Image 1: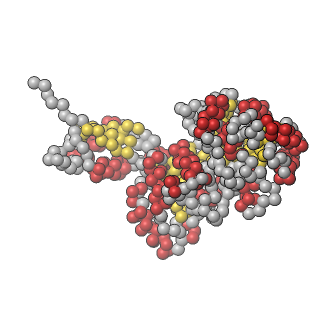
Image 2: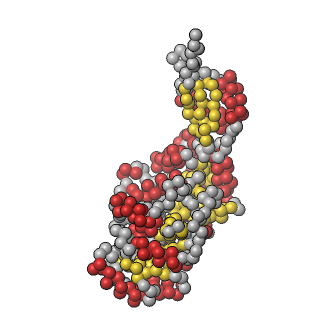
Image 3: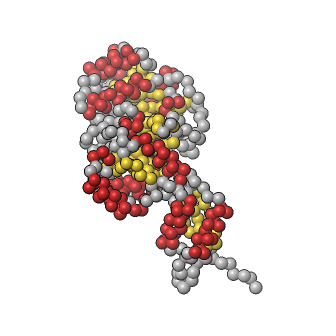
Length: 467
């Protein structure tokens, strides 16, 4: 994995995306796409991090860390393009390895150009030659990238990759950045032209699909997209990188981000799990609404609570989706209702949808729930109406006396949306219970369905009159 110093040096060379620009600037369907393919553990994800100029793809010195095809935005010489990181491509793979290979093959078919990564120190293997023949038949522009050329001694070995029949090999060191500039120039040369600047406002709404491991997130995403977009396996933790997909749902496009299952404690994770947890948190920050997937066949666990806490703390709109509903009998449904009433009482404002990713039951109800949650997330109450409402509320239920004095509420304002935030100005401290009372009444009278609501207090002491 790249050190932070090495990565910063490359950022100076390449130029990262502007800090004030949203992370999800473009739809992968509206800019040229480069698919990065190759055998397991040849350094594809490290190369992707080099190309995009930041550490996004999960990298570990173990084959098979990347399992799905994952899209990242890249910028070079004023041109934007999308990089698809893929799992290791093994021609004769079976089981889960076959699914991962299929993901890479689909990426190569749908991309505008392909980068075949080969370990220059090993040379062209039987698998590399088989992949090269597949790419030759595809008719797509192909770059052969001889990776792990850390010094001049290995460059001669890289030239042997002419034998693949795909043209000039480009010697690079993804780990150290050697040759990366020439490679990026070659990438732009084979990609179709695309506008350098796009309007970041608008576009598909961004949905983070989160939950503890093995609750069916990838299965639900595959059901929504109508294709095997994410690798599904009975082993928990199959998804490591966030996987994003364009989904047509309810007559509009949505950008869904499938994420790694969040573990009990990030501090207890190591290696792949640790970095995957960081990527999941980043995906949640980049989203507008979170779909929290819960396994309806199992009791609501501490891990489910932790996921919900992350969503609330991130200030995202939220929809609770209970999966595997087709497997519930009447006894389990009654027990689950009691669990929801008690365990999820702090998030009663979230919309709830009961689905089956396996059979497709009620997945069409997800789009209306997402729209409602986003409306609540972006809702604004006019200041005049808010203060008229607040005056009536305080007259009926004044704040409790504290320290022998009753604080007087002066006025309130909505400080922001996405999520809604309110500031109440008073002459004294308001108890947490009274703030919760204000929040509850705000929801009862104005809605904010599916969105967290923040209520803070600013104390303004009465000014004494000058004599």
